[in-house]
Amino acid sequence: EPEVTQTPSHQVTQMGQEVILRCVPISNHLYFYWYRQILGQKVEFLVSFYNNEISEKSEIFDDQFSVERPDGSNFTLKIRSTKLEDSAMYFCASSAEGRYNSPLHFGNGTRLTVT
Amino acid sequence: AQSVSQHNHHVILSEAASLELGCNYSYGGTVNLFWYVQYPGQHLQLLLKYFSGDPLVKGIKGFEAEFIKSKFSFNLRKPSVQWSDTAEYFCAVITYNTDKLIFGTGTRLQVFP
Image (cartoon, rainbow over all chains, first blue to last red; front, side, top):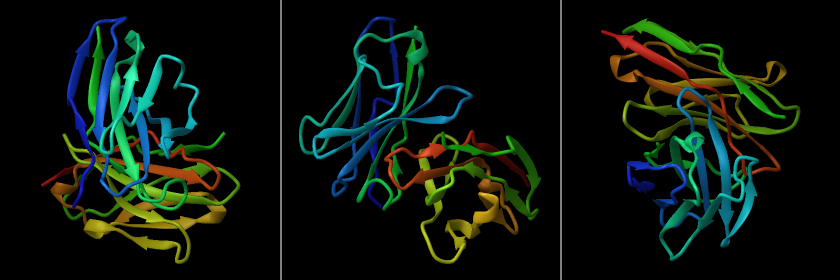
C-alpha cells in the first residue's frame, strides 16, 4: 500500500534556527496537509495545500511558517525562526480528493525538538 | 467552533474483553467522521470512516462504529480485543466547508494477555 513518507524522523534545532520538514505524499494524491501534535495535546491542523497554493490555514500557521511543493513529489514545511513552543510531532498527510470527500493518509511524523 | 471529545483517556483491558470508546462532536451541520489508530512508533492509520448511509460502519481488524446523529456521537466498538490492539485511538471530524480535520484528544488502549 502506498505511504506518505516523512524525513527526518527526529530533528533537533536551537531556538531561532530555521528548519525544513520534508514529506513525500502518495503519488496520485492532490491535496496535502500538515498537522502537529504537541506532547500530551490534540493533533492540530496547520495548513492544507492544493494546486500549488494554500487552501486553508489555522491560526497557528503564522508568518513563521511556510509550505512549498518544490517539485512533483516533495511537500515541505518551513519554520523560519523556531521557538521552544514549536517542539512537537509534525505529521504530513495527503488525500486523493481533498476536503470532505476522501480520508487523509498520514506519514510517520517528524519529532521536532527546539532547545 | 467545532470540537471533538473523547471521554476515555486511558483504557486497560484484558484480551477477549469488549471495547467501547466514546466520541462526541459539536457541530450542527453535516459531518464526515473517522477513527484513526496509532500503533506504537507508527503513523496514524485510518480504522474506519462514516460519510453517509448505514450509520453502523465496519472497519479493519474487527472494529466498528455507530453514528448516532441525535447524540452527536460516533463510538468505536470491538467485541473481543487482542493484545495487538494496544494503541492510541483518535476520533476525528471534518465538516462540509473546510479542509480541517478536527481530532479528539485520543484514547490510549492497553490490552494485557
